[in-house]
Length: 212
Image 1 (tube, rainbow, N blue to C red):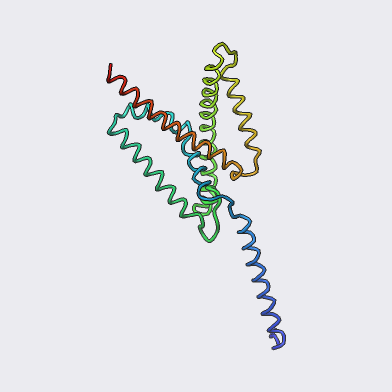
Image 2: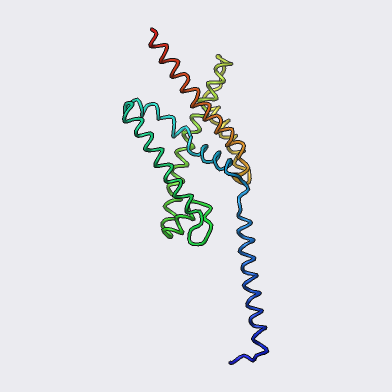
């Protein structure tokens, strides 16, 4: 049925209003998804995620087994690969016209249904293994501090693992990862301090052995 000249402006106006309303809703949705953190917070999160006990604990053994040339070359190659893959993921933060806020949704947008569930599976496996290593490493560290001050103490490794697990359970109640920014900042500082201490002790031991 043909429209009269009087009906055309009202139809155009209604369509325009619907488009404006749709655009407004999309903008509000994007604003609601905007992160609250800065690049410093992102650096803390990334550093804490990468520098885990499961990652750096085997490094001395690996370097000792491979020797200096191959060991250092492998470490540099792994660093470059991690850096490049991080740049690729960062470049895909808005893929197919939509903001990707998780690895799983990015994989789904790129590879479809199986991409989503493949990433979800590998994330759970990595999370399980990483958490087991962290629990043992944290429990061992707490026990070492405890034994230093209480040589005859009766607390065992299992107790400290439970203590640390309860602390993690408390942190998991926070609303989002942004709430952990200062915890991650402290972890980053601790990691740098650990690396610096290890390098210093290694140099000291090397000079001491050379003097003998």
